[in-house]
Amino acid sequence: MDPKAYWVGSNYFKGIGAFRTRVILDHFGDLETAWHAPIDGFAEIGIPPKTPENIQQTRNQLNLEKICANLATKGIELISWENEIYPRRLKEVDQLPPVMFVRGEIKVEDDWAVAIVGTRRMTVYRRQVTEDPAIFLATNGVTVVSGLDQGADFTAHSFALKNCEHTVAVLGCGVDQIYPPEKRKLNEEICP
Image (cartoon, rainbow, N blue to C red):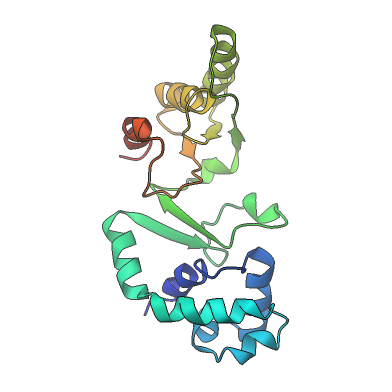
């Protein structure tokens, strides 16, 4: 099985975030070994008592091959800490996400990205103060990042696309579940 599958599987472990993922990797060497390790091996490395039970339950319930096939069908790629294309500047964050699910491509120029976020309730003034920097950044080769939500996010993405045809949306709901549904059209423009 593709080693990425174990990164996908570990993403389902309750109680395991960035810090504990690092502890697991340091102890087991890789996530494939951890996936197949006896549960008592997790207790030995200081994982809280309830978490190994959750890990075992997750391992029993998941079909990693099926999940990975589903991701591939939807054009979703998994990027982990181990991938060269994991965003360089994101690696500077203390609690960087061990796994990112990506539709589209991460470009080298995305190293120079600026997030534009703001209110969902737009006024003429708020639209202008969102639109102006989005246009300025996009026309000067800086990737505009936002959350594909209503208001400021939608405005930032729209004007970035009009001025450079590239923007990055970071979603809290997953790349396969566009929310709110009204944003599907913009999502398709960002990542056809």
